[in-house]
Image (cartoon, rainbow, N blue to C red; front, side, top):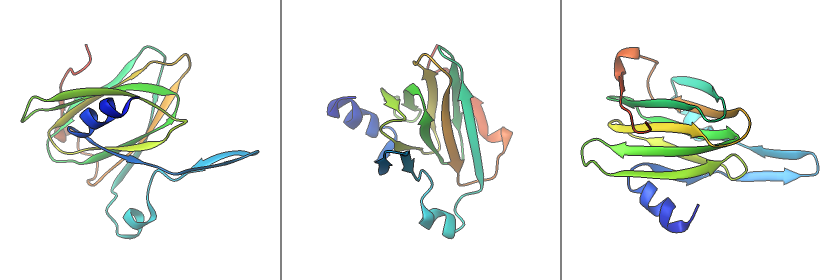
Length: 140
């Protein structure tokens, strides 16, 4: 992803780098910060699997803030701010971990653009509530 792509994406959804530690055994990164865990700001954690060529999400949350991190594979992520209509997209890979924060009213979708199953770890500031999710086709 280029700096321009990331800057444009960041105008719609916040993107934060996540430090990855690597050695001969493999790598480690912490997608959920200790301070957020310790302050009780996380109420729902989920792991999403997506098959190659498939799209997940394609929805918007009206009240929930959701934080997502690609933990396996490669995704094209498309976001749209429903209040401004601004839309952006980037490709994110688990080898360069970031946290993507979607505020309420930001529609989002994830397309697995890799050759194998891909995974996203997500957490939010509210308990799961299906009535907070509204379909919104940002990837068709």
